[in-house]
Length: 215
Ligand code: ADP
Ligand code: ZN
Image (cartoon, rainbow, N blue to C red; front, side, top):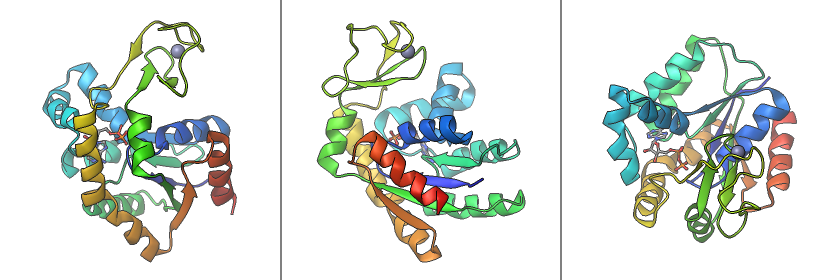
């Protein structure tokens, strides 16, 4: 059992790899992005508060996301936690260290997924997801076999994220470089950092992550 962080810019493939780890190892994915989108869909007060911030591509407050993670950490760990999209600031990283200590858990690895910026932009603009089963598609690189119909589950409920447009993406990248990328140095200094090539094929990325986990 291991608790890990997947670290990388938007579009690096964190969510995709996290889902594979959930299936392969029974790990528990904690995606603050998914939690915030759920809050938005459910129409809660917090969801309404964060909707505009997220659509612009800015980070929501540390207080909100730390609160979300705190709630989840009290649950059972299963095969370990995968932190996906959290922490995104140094304050969040410090808070995570404290929370883990409080529940008697440790952080075993931080896996940086490296991708170049041009690839990120191409990956994100063009991305859409099946609302039925969560399968991720792309206009150019992975279209559905039948337009508008999910290959996996047959749903016609295809969704595009409000922040997967050129303007919001520019902001997301800037937020990443200003606030999140310092975490690479932070975890390197702690001795927790491993890096994998996020541009490799999906299976190859999964193998690299498996190597880190089994080391
Ligand atoms: P990405 O594809 O950009 O990695 P996520 O789904 O992880 O996207 O997050 C989407 C948005 O949710 C972010 O742009 C931000 O507004 C908000 N968000 C998610 N996680 C955090 C966090 N840890 N701290 C602050 N904001 C967050
Ligand atoms: Zn589907």
